[in-house]
Image (cartoon, helix red, strand yellow):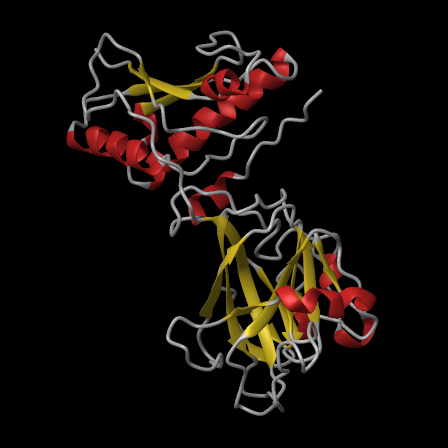
Length: 355
């Protein structure tokens, strides 16, 4: 039985730069916790309190900051032991020493060979109470690995290490603002773990920085950037009353309510139609393939319809104009015995309900 994974709608609405591509980094804002962080002097586990995240090496202790316990001043948000820092998004973020500490996370799914990806995150330097030099790194090293990385295997990863840099090429240092750093990556295939930080590589591979700084980090994102060629769509920007319209480029992975790349054009077309004619009301219908139980499929298909409704609401379309319904696997349009057919069945359709 395939476990059905329902996406968090809030995360979907945050991914704007690359349309509706899935972020492969779980818990990207360090907000889902196993437990609240404690004072520095009492807490050696640090980042491991954030679900999915871990540190590498016995001397590596990246820190976790969260507003879940305002009584813990040193690791609280927005005021912590070093000053005041508002998260880039949400209620939490992490922190690490730029030359010695590493963070590691297992991706939602392996990378596909030859496909193009973009890794980006937001960083900020420690506040005015920092005792570290103000001159900082020009980059943050990262590695994508097929296997979990341990301290003893760090050297083996170094030949494939990449660099997260600023778009303007400037040093990564700002006491007040969050700075975006990023890197493009072509997958070798099968990479499942992401590690980044200053303690990855020896001098012979990627030189360590001359100075050490303390970075705050938030909203880590790894997405596919090579979008597939859109399927020819019957949607011409018109919604006739008597016809059900299939959104051919609004597709989903097996067992997921997360949009695959390529959905942007049709969703924006639909939004424009609804914006121009405020009398139009629609039902958004979700469907699944035959995998799993029908009870699971009904829930999953409704979640897919909700993803589309949430997009439209985020663009200013009134929710009262948008009803949703999940039909499960009851109305297949493709052959469930083939992958292509199952892909066709993982779909969304819309029809007008106004009279």
